[in-house]
Image (cartoon, rainbow, N blue to C red; front, side, top):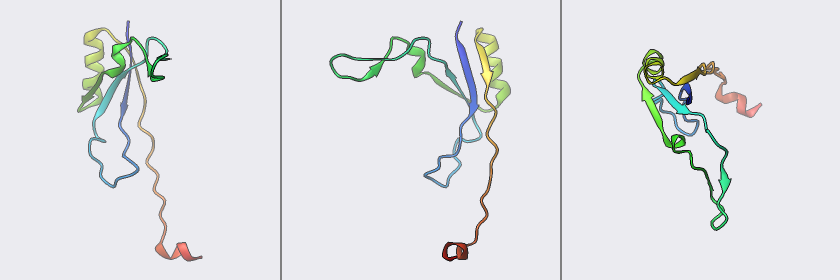
Length: 93
């Protein structure tokens, strides 16, 4: 049985936009470890579920999908948003 991880995507720290941060993402845990290819050195495995990422509008929709398909799942809570309030003048202290 496949184990899935459900989480909310964090905001990209390199950009100011918040696109797709309100959606919930489902990823499957790897079933086998990755190994290096002897010829190219690239990391790979035979597990194709590593390539699947599903997006859902709500947490309830993601949980319903897992229960309908018979997947075990863990919900990772969204991290707390912390704001560092700082004035521009603080750069010159």
